[in-house]
Image 1 (cartoon, helix red, strand yellow):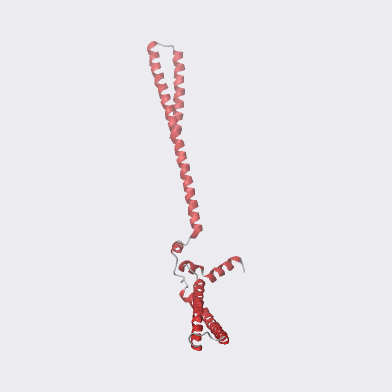
Image 2: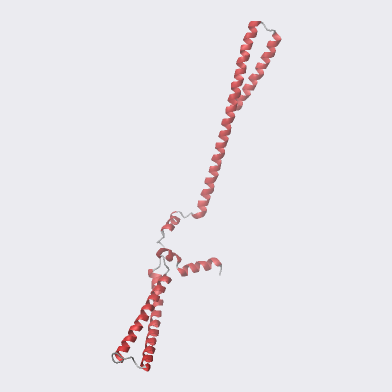
Length: 211
């Protein structure tokens, strides 16, 4: 027999679920009853011997030695008889208690076992949900990091755009000043080439910021 089967049979024989439900096993209950009966039985034998002694000897006298031995023998025989009868009754009593009184029906559950019935998916389903939740959390963190990086890049692009706008404004002012002061045509052509280059750079930055 394999180990899981042995454990299952051991759990069934020990009535572990009943032990959880009642806070004691049926076997423990019977052991306490058996122990209480024997304690009472020994006390009863002392009473029986005292009655024998009072009935068979004159008042105030000790019984003869032979009579005392005989009374002890009779008490022991009575004790053995009562013990034997009780053992027969206790086996029947234990069967009755285990099967009919101290047995938990299948439809009766401990409070901590009720969620397993409401949610029969069990531990595997719970682990799967926890893994899915962890994956979603990781994806969310990645999205947050990507958004923060994008915002930082957009901030840098705005600074570059503002700087380029300032340069273009300065060039415009310089162009107007050159017209007024009659600068030579070749210097003006070089200046316009610089303006076009800066405008191309600005266009590329704006295009990248929209992607």
